[in-house]
Image 1 (cartoon, one colour):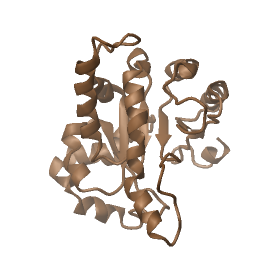
Image 2 (image 1 turned 90 degrees about the vertical axis):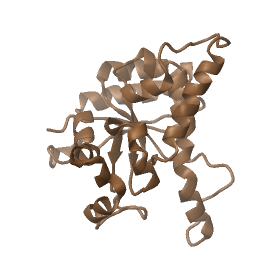
Image 3 (image 1 turned 135 degrees about the vertical axis):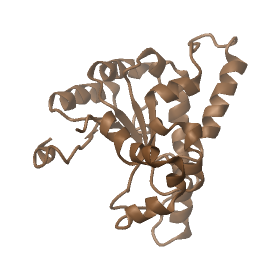
Image 4 (image 1 turned 90 degrees about the horizontal axis):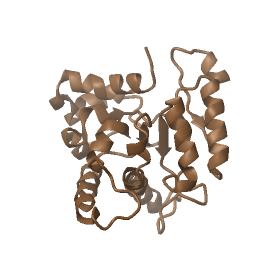
Length: 237
């Protein structure tokens, strides 16, 4: 919050919530909201329970109350690949790590957390795009297959409809995934530079955007993906 006050119209830090305990995460979320932060981050592998289990219900109720967007970012979760600088292992890990967010997405969609709390907006940070249409198709397919045998929570909407209403995904530099944006939804995608990480398009981000298939979606879609979606989500004038 102190950092943001240096340039409140330019800087919009997200509160990094302690997720070892859902109550601690809820308390810090409410404190972040009082401090005027525009959003927060949760960590899917930090606590004993995943964020879509019932122990997190009070947290998501607080998210519904505050209206703050919640990001789930990449983190630990791969099983056989380990980050090792200077080794082929690092490139291999980075190549596949975005797809670890598939479990968070499916859990949040099927558990009813999003469906029952329409003001909750979930951001999959640095998730990439290419895998998302496949997972959404699978979710809709399995929703139909297992609807009658589901005894705890039956969705009243398709998982893909909940996604369209409440979920956002961010990406840096893709070709296939960008061509699939119409399948994901122009209003559900946000570009990021990933500065200052190794995967960043900086300092040639404009060039990277211009060289990508994004321009084929039209100027209005480009502006929405690189600017307007984030501005609306975080209340940036």
